[in-house]
Image (cartoon, rainbow, N blue to C red):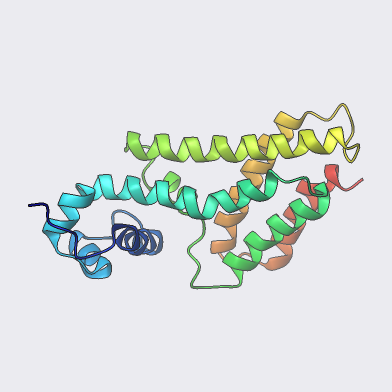
Length: 194
């Protein structure tokens, strides 16, 4: 007879993701995970595998829930400059102004694990490439509508926007002055404000 789970795996995964997001991978113990998830060790291992496999599931969940919002916005036919400005301003507002915000889980993972965890590095790379493709496609549509110059290199600028966007999330966590971050946004977005 098949036993049913006494917990909802997606809810437990969300709780684990938030704990990892706040503390990082290394500073999160299995004991803290089972307490936060409201499950026992056996259920954790039976459902998610080991801590590393659970972390990979959390990165995928983050991409599905949070990163997809950015990609979805960039997939729409919206005015280029105001949309980019809103996205970049939101990063600063959410991270810099909210001390309970933990930045971008993918960027945090890149800093903490990418050099010695191949699985995490692959997931982070896929995330950043997805973001670059979204920015590039958004700029291509801006060229088609005439908002952007026809000779603008959408791919090069898509990559630049990806680096600036993720860099802002990191810098905002350091509490650099707000005007520093606003200057970065203004300079980064200047080519799109014509």
